[in-house]
Image 1: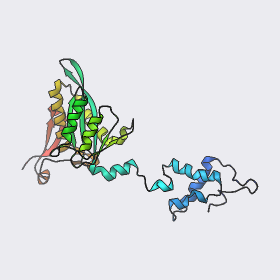
Image 2: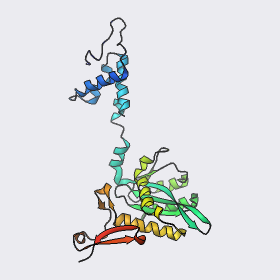
Image 3: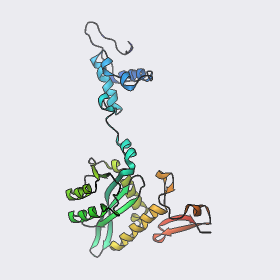
Image 4: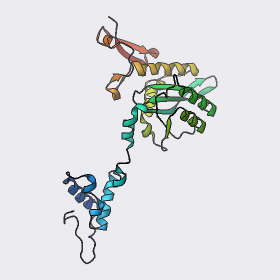
Length: 274
């Protein structure tokens, strides 16, 4: 039961006096904090309140802290926990744009990529200045191939509401036994792994280059992906290299030498062979 200092009913009116909302919240939260031996549902069960005005306060506190009602509390899962539980079978897909100097002038190219959330492995599906339906369908066929498609072993594919992800592309992905999760509009944080990779490739590579033609863009992306996978440390993975190309035994032997790619734009260090 709630203490009299929180709930005081008027015997004539049959209802509790109005108390400022913030003051009531503070009293209720202070009282529930002292009842740690009971479950959250029992501590703040709305049916135990003796006043309709106080009864609404419990729901107000729940909503403010993002807690679902008791019947739905065990049925729902937050997006953070969903990502954490399914990270090994989740792949994110997205586009980013970059400017390329061609014979026709400065042209915007659209780059389509996929990133596996658990391993952080990135696969380029291609790039084009005209990502129409036919191009997207061919990209869908490539990534769903049984032998070397990057969606092998994947159960969920995260994508935004970009119209380039057309219905025919979505149907091709479904043929590979992959469930598509279409994210809400204007929510890049829900596909944060893909968004973070876009920031990395632009800040560390593309924004520092003047690209002349498709071959220049292809070479820059290929070199950066090798650097990203085999030479670059990742803070989100305990500062480790994702897919080191050197044997583990060699990493602790030999002199440390600096290496570089793309004319010194990408630099890294490794030990020489003894």
